[in-house]
Length: 231
Image (cartoon, rainbow, N blue to C red):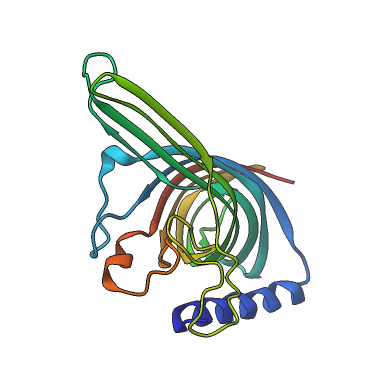
């Protein structure tokens, strides 16, 4: 397990222990739209035209620590990825369209500050850990007028994150199963409704078997808009 992953696991375990010991946990049922992308350069940039629309849903805990400070652990099913389009399918002899759409079980754990009052503005930050469970790679296009199409399930490595310096099941075209990064969120809650804007900044390489600088290019970036219902 590399040092960054160890650090995030340690934070998650610490905050999880705090949440378990809390006296009262409220729950928020959350659904939302994801605008997902993947970085294309070492400094974390991405091409906005490659943004893929996906979705998320799950359950968020809401634990009051002190009057304005809350801990929010959660479990989400969330879609990530990106798309690429070259050429115009309606007019070009050659064109290409690819969609990369993996799905994760994600465990966020955010520390959130809320304003006082019945209608409250909030903002928070925290780590997340994701486990790849499914997804599709779809490619279609034309080359000199000849149409082609493929639709394949995404393959994840069988990496054991407790092993050091070795990734089981790595190979060309196979994704790492473990993703991790940092969440930032802000929004407003009123009575039972919660509206929020979220950003997930992935820190893990998503391609398996990459341990050089070129592998740093491929990391998840997800903007999402969510609506929650306090249960």
